[in-house]
Amino acid sequence: MLAFDYRHFGESKGEPRQLFLIPYQLEDYTAAIKYARSPKEIDPARIALWGTSASAGYGIVIAAKDKNIACVCAQCPGLDPHASGKMFLKKLGIGHLLRLFVHGQRDMMRFRLGLSPHKIPIVGKPGSIAFFPILDAYEGYSKLASKNFVNEICARVILRSHGFKPVEHLQNMQCPILIQICEHDSLAPLSTETATELEKYAEVKRYPIGHFDIYIGENFEKSISDQLEFFKKHLCLTKTINGGD
Image 1: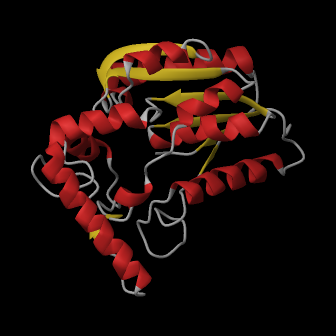
Image 2: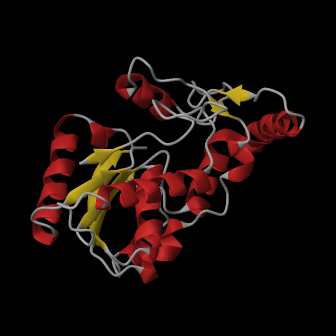
Image 3: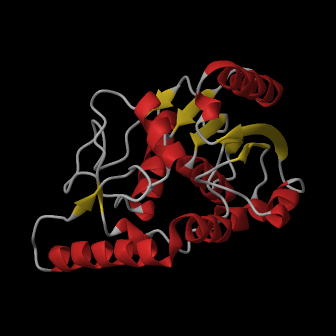
């Protein structure tokens, strides 16, 4: 298995730190696949992609273009930005979203002037200024984050994370897909229409849990068991690329 940190995060290089740009992360994921195919002992046509949350959608977008991907596992994927937008508007209110927009504009202005970035917390308690000021997200990150986790992100993400719709790429997929849906997802919800549409293109597993429940305890074990069954069915032995979150 090959795991990696996206540029600007973790142990990867890149300045400014904590800069989240989807095009960059897609490039990094594609570069990781190219690297995994380079050893002589690896069959370049037997690469499996695994991702969770945001990166789960990346795997679908990449595999829709790369016809040599053997299969894709997408755990609690971010596929439906319209459903997410509606949920965040309902939970946070228009006032909070406008305040986030102002923070995003401030960061973009500082970037254009060659100044240091303006950052906001990734997660925070309800009522605070954060990208995800949602209790479920705050408690989930608190339980799962490593000691070197940096709870900051460049605020321009608020302006640049729209328009990315992995679900639109499903119709171009030619490899098997496993999509694992958390039915009470507080970060990456799916509309009823989108959830039904997935059945046309993928093997769908549903779990009556929240977004972060799939990472711990019995829910984690069930998720992993379903993934292993999927990989054994479609791969036997291969190289898996893990894009993280």
